[in-house]
Image (cartoon, rainbow, N blue to C red; front, side, top):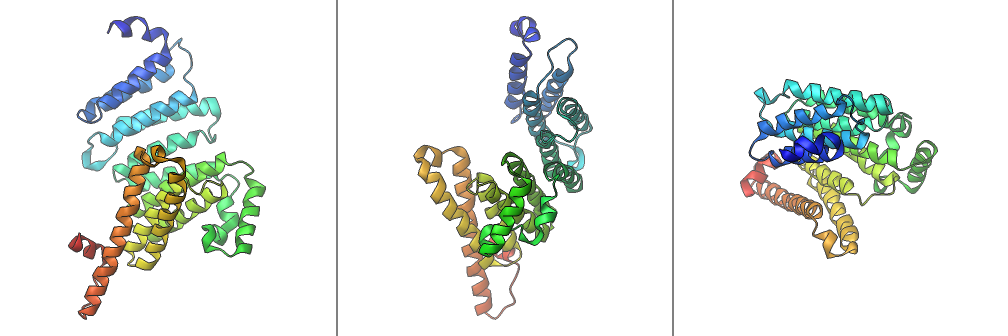
Length: 312
């Protein structure tokens, strides 16, 4: 309290760090309190007479609000009304500084969409993803490349050269491509959660292709897309296709992460990714075994996920 009364009002950056830490500290056991702390945190963006909060600070605030809102209990799984106002204020601040259609708005849109995804409001999340796509794909790369917008190993050498050339003509830098890849990845996850598996597969394939176009095919997001594609094809009872994606993820993981030594390979993000790959490969083997056993007994095949629950 003594620090808050003296130092923090004169040092907005220190106060921001303290408030973010307060939100994080109360997430686990006091989610409602964390949301209240997040609301107070958003109030720091327009304190009269204070130094304007930069985009980087708004990004940190947005991430804290998203975590608190996702953890807070809501009626019928819906987003709490106050959360809408928090994100609206952040959109206004960043829009005034960077422009309404600045690529920097995309990070805030993804945070807002994540909250709606977690709460099960998939239609609202898809609307936010559509807005994000209009910003990051302002040059209509998805429409221009069309049927060639696939991972490189799914194209012929000439088709891959054509895809890369069309992209290079419109996206000379990699930063915008990385943002596009992340939006497509999150879009695919939301489609999968809403039950639109074919749309999820299309978006995840486009995300992997975008990571390739940005020359970061070993990006953890790209490997995560491969694992999610494996899960989607398992849901469609396409075990052979699922195995292709999962083995590709395994190959890229071993090729990339272990080249940087044991420290990187055992980092929390890498450990989680390794666990997801192993779980996907194990599920694929169980699915194939379950399908084979059912066919050998002359019984009609049940959905693969039912077999997974039985065998696991």
